[in-house]
Length: 311
View (tube, helix red, strand yellow):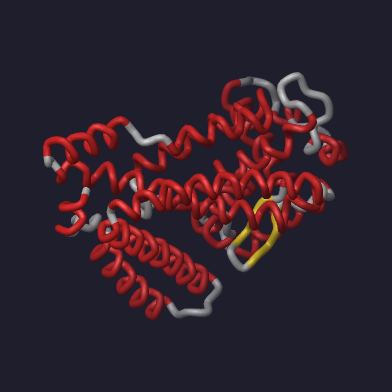
C-alpha cells in the first residue's frame, strides 16, 4: 500500500523508488502484481510517467483511509482491508448518500487535479500559490460531492478572484503612484493563473486518454466542455494581466517555463541514472549545470520601468 501511494504521489516509478529506497524493477513488479491481484489497471503508462486511472484514484482514496485507520485503531490490518475479489465493484461505488451517481466523474476529475498540483512545487511556484491551489481543489472535491457540476464550477471560480493584497496594491499603484507594492501580488496572481492553466491542459489529456474509457464518450465530452470553460476563464484573466503589464508578465512567464523545464530535466537525468543510461559522473555534471541555471533564475524578475509607468 505504501509503495502504491508513493507511485501515485510521484507519478513516476523511478522517483517513487528513490523516495522509498527500493530498486526500480522491484517496485514496478509490486505495482503490476497489485493490478493483477485486483484485475484492474491502476495506472496508465505514458512517456510523461504514471497517470492513475479512475480505479487508481479510487484505490488511492481507499489506501489513505486505511492508513488513517491503521494509525488510529487497534483493529488487525486484515480486518480493515476489503476482499480482493470485490475491488472491481468497490472502485465504482454503488449507492452513496454523499455522492450521487452523476457526480462521480466530476469528483474523480477534481481528485486528479488535486494530485497533479504538487508536481509544480519544489520552487516552480511559490508555497503561497501551491497552498492556495491545494486548498481550492479540496473545496472543489467537497463541492462536487455535494452539488455536482454546479458546486465544482462554483468552487473553481474562487481562485480566479484577485486576492485582497492584489486589490489593495493595485489601488495604491493607481491612486498613490506606489507601483513597487504591486510587484509581488502581480507575480503571485500571474504565476497562479499560469500554473492552473498548465494543470487544466493536463486534465484534458487525462480525460481523453484515461477517463473516457470508464465514463463513456458522452460524459467525457461533458467533462471536456467543463475544462475548456475553465481554461477560457483563466485565459481571460491572463490576457488582462498581459495587456496591462506586458513587459513584466513576459519576464514572469519566461521564468516559469524555464524553471519547469529545468525541473523536468533534473527528473529525466535522475531516471536515466537509475536505469544506468547515464554514468554517475555524467549525471553529476549535468545536475550541477541544471542547478546553476536554476539558482540563476529562481528570483522573480523586477518589473520593467515601462510597466511601472502604465500600471
